[in-house]
Length: 208
Image (cartoon, rainbow, N blue to C red):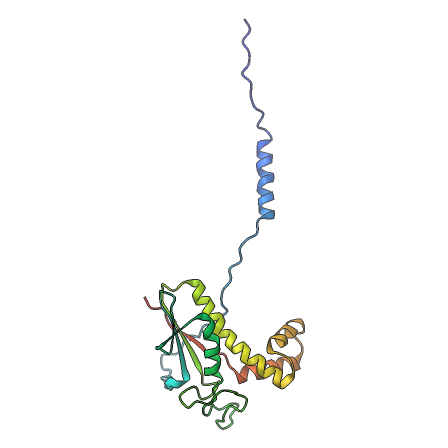
């Protein structure tokens, strides 16, 4: 009796199929892009640099987020994320005293501020510092949300002043500048608004 050959599967095209699938997934897969908060880190300071000037406590707005995501303001008031922005705006826009000299001029009051001029709160937007303290156990979402509200406070104040001075919001001017980066007038106006409300946010090392 003649011996039959065992049937075989033709796998010659399997390599081609695998290669095509690889190309397909490489082309169609969406790669996640890392997002984060844009921050300019300070440069390394020389060892012989003099001590920084002492800050008045009233010019520092302390926001603390603990490991339970509780938000404590000024060490005494618990707040929700929705409340942070308005409180930060009141602090920045208070205008209770004289500011730091601008362009060599004498220290002056903030004549564009619309705050309550509470002597117990910040003197001037260029002296108002927001200090954000977090814990290593703080959730990323809460940390980002608080950051957004603090930055949003500056944006709201800049928008208000820009509309008052130029009839257009600061946010719109930024958009216009991105479309027309060579517009020197626009660039100068943005610089002025940022100078009126400089964004000063200090972040401490997270607690363990």
